[in-house]
Amino acid sequence: MTARTRPETRPAPEDARASGRAGLQIYVVLAVLAALLLSQQWLVPRLDHPAVATWSTIFVAIVVQSVPFLVGGVLLAAVIATLLSERALRRLVPANPTLGVPVAGLAGVALPGCECASVPVASSLMRRGVAPSVALTFLLAAPAVNPVVLVSTAVAFPGRPEVVLARFLASLVTAVAVGWLWLRFAGRVPLLHRQRSHDHGEGAARAFLGSVRHDFIHAAGFLVLGAMIAAAINTFVPREIIDSVAGNALLAVVSMALFAFVVALCSEADAFVAASLSAFSDTAKLVFMVVGPAMDVKLASMESGQFGGAFAVRFVPLVLVVAVLSACGMGWWLL
Amino acid sequence: MVAAVTRGTQTLLLTVTGAVLVRMAVGDTYLRYVNSWMRWPLIACGVLLVVLALVDLWSQDDAPADDHSEGSHVPRAAWLLFVPSLVFFLIAPPALGAHFAERAQTAALPTEPSSEVVLPDLPEGDPVPLLMDDLVMRAFYGGDTLEGRRIELTGFVSKGPGDGWYVTQFGMNCCAADATVMRVTASGVEAPPVDQWVEVVGTYVAGTGADGRTPPELAVEQLELVEAPKNQYR
Image 1 (cartoon, rainbow over the protein chains, first blue to last red):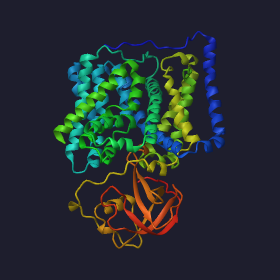
Image 2: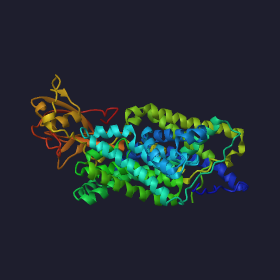
Image 3: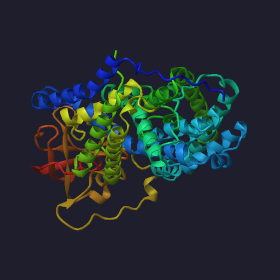
Image 4: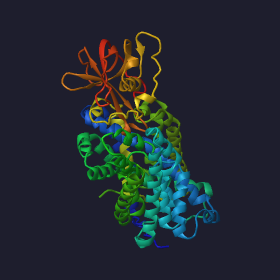
């Protein structure tokens, strides 16, 4: 195991005053919530501005759309964590990580889910002893190459199967290349692992529910943070800025990658948005569709929460660069 | 410094979030944000979150020392999970409207050349009700199928250049974040207030909307202010 585990920071349990305050917290929170709801009549007119309304609609929309997928992801993660036996896992994942990386990339075809689902799943795989590079490849491949995404791409680009093929190959190459690079160069990067003492006393059902609850609360806060940023970009950055760079080939590619990073769309929807960006070249559109599912502001936020800041500052730029290069290569070859 | 989220507050967080999701999906509010097929996933998901909270209450009664056990320490970012519920109650975000229509992407047009496309004639009826995407697409292919017919169209009002205005509707794939805008220029009548839903009857102005850059134009004969539909997206 190359990853280091960090001991959990917890408030000193013997400090009676601190734990008394902790017990109070829920009542304080309840009081604040009640006060806010009571002041609703007074607050609502003061928040009534079209830009605020647009921001809040997009923000709530991203959260509402993502939460069911996140819950699906944490359920699958809990299955891996508590129900899948060591032997079954051994059989599914090759012991040799060099071989495991491409297998994980292809395995991504089988999990039709949003990118938010794959973060807890990857974390759960690592906790069960799967090599980080293999789990990360799965994390990158699952939201990008699954059938739902490919079908929606085909619908968004009718009569152009080469776009679907280019997207599939570029995403798969990105996932596998990042996995191998991580294996070769970043084996010692510390990964934050939440340590979990498996209470063997409690039943499987209790352990399962505990895992779901914990993973959900753990990831959801970061999902909300990412959604707030993405909604702000959507609302407050004028489209003209994005459109004005479309003419220049290099600028177009860079700005499309950046755009995919900040708007944080669902991988099932981004093909339609890409198709509507008619000012851009096909390669720039491909960059948008390959970067988006692999890395965006919401994922970066969730990953730094799940695996730690030291991990995120290396992983996020690495994925961005590899995804852009891979998409440009495929675009040049196929489109 | 923000306090760590205690186990009790986590339970509250799950309950509030779950309740909001169920509340949203049981009414029609969720249609402002996501597709209609999301109803059951949202209800299932909300119920699950509430169940998780209840199970935890029950197991805490079992073992009062549980607050120090594994799993109770989560990142402080978890506090943010209160934000969507609060925004939902305090701002009550409406469906996207004219403000976003000015900055949204225009909906993608088909890429097949017109020679390969055979559009069916418009159905019987006068005026003939038409969906926004249907009208935009027919105009894009030259608008032959629209000529000589009175068309009835529904959408909300957004501001156009100068005194002009558009009958507008959003198309949505996954959620409101990826909404693309469809517009039809309305000519011949004064603009109603923005965001007002209208039903217009008019005739297609030949040649407009064929380049795919500018919206098609409807010479409006009749304008009626209507209630917003339950699902405001296409």
